[in-house]
Length: 121
Image 1 (cartoon, rainbow, N blue to C red):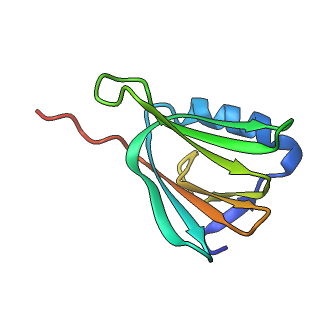
Image 2 (cartoon, rainbow, N blue to C red):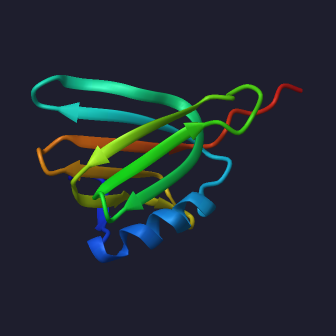
């Protein structure tokens, strides 16, 4: 898992993802699903993060984008059922630059964090 240096313990997923949502407020993300059966597919390319959430009862990680501006009024939600690993990518300063979430079937969801685009002058 090249570049992913810190594995998050399962018992911390809920709190970790809740804190991550607050920490990455205003950032944009790209999300790519790597699946050996269906190939690699971009789910999201540089859209504003709405939230990360782990539901321990249903054992699912939810990643939501959009839904908070007139430019992106619709929220897209991506679900990762039965995750088995969450990894954090190299840090720049105090913020992570990406994540890897692996599900029970071996599918990998790679999330890359981006600064929002600059506003036109």
